[in-house]
Length: 308
Image 1 (tube, one colour):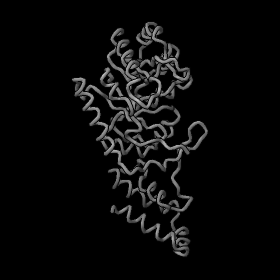
Image 2 (cartoon, one colour):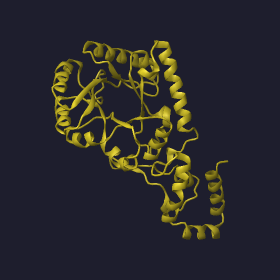
Image 3 (cartoon, rainbow, N blue to C red):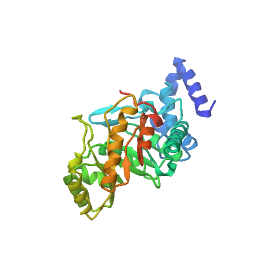
Image 4 (spheres, rainbow, N blue to C red):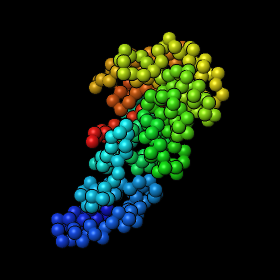
């Protein structure tokens, strides 16, 4: 048993005794708890300042008073709890499994593993999980919302070499803030958005999101719009066009995604854009077989996102 699990067990025992628990609640103020928990964070994460998995662990076991419960992340008006961040399977274990899957897919495709960039999708997960993934060796992270990364950013400033990719739809009025937070914008789908990003004066890598399905909810430029959009991006001073990105219709089976991945590869070849962002946890092997250079993986690394 790890030392922090032992402490949790002891505190749970204390809580079962009303007299001892009342004394603990009076003494274990939030400030006292915060002074102790950075030690746990340092042991588990190899650093301080990246959140506190131990604090989450204590709370999960019912060993913290209510006032010390970990805070969630507010997105689009709802509070997303981060109590799900602690999983029975660790991020390093999940990462090994994902890398094994990548290696097998590359072997089948006769490709080098180094030709595939793994982007860890951390939407809704707290900054502490990003830190844990960073410690496990990941350097590319995907977020869907500008405002979410803005909330997490203060806890991530010491992650040297980390690159954040915006993989959710970008509204032109949020271009300036996106340019401040992200190194890569994968969802440029109009000349207007490209122009707004360029006007920020920040060098950015971008991808063009292409809509290949008939789903109304899907964003992206129509393939017929690509020539003009490519010209508009290449006319800018601060944007570097990397390639194309798409998201096929959801299916539990990976094979239905294959025609969409193949079509994106054909468009990449047509416009001499070698980088292709496609494939998620359930279908990234098929995406690699069809030429993906960037895969966006969340569930396979961090488990399913739990709704409040």
